[in-house]
Image (cartoon, rainbow, N blue to C red; front, side, top):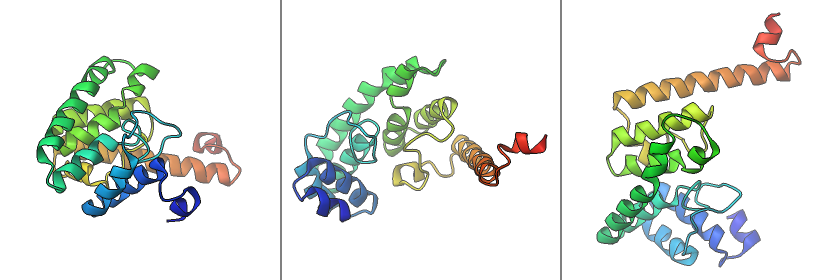
Length: 189
């Protein structure tokens, strides 16, 4: 609400971010109203923030979720199919290498929508790409409802364990840096 107070009720970016978090909370009627004030939600807009755009901000996933939960099922299905088709070639191109172009294909955005649409294998493959290209990919928070739909899927469980391992490693590195001893490797010398 602080952001709303600063930017104003009619700011489309604020409304887009609000729609995101309202949808995550399952408050779809309120999310739908905020989304209407935010549209058209751009494909890309910086700086990256969840709900800020359709790419880094995962708004394709959220828009499909809002549409579906507010009785706009045909529109939701159409948007999901269009968005997955738009993003799919970028996922295939990024399978072998980590380049900026592959990262710009937004593997996490693709994974979030694929997961929500029940395409577990595609979602996990995209998350694997994201994790090959970055330690903790932006937007990959297992607590988000679309990623929770992957719970119980064995390859996703492997990803979660790897994510937790990386978090522990980063935490240890930060503690070592904070203690003034550099990285854990430097401290061991």
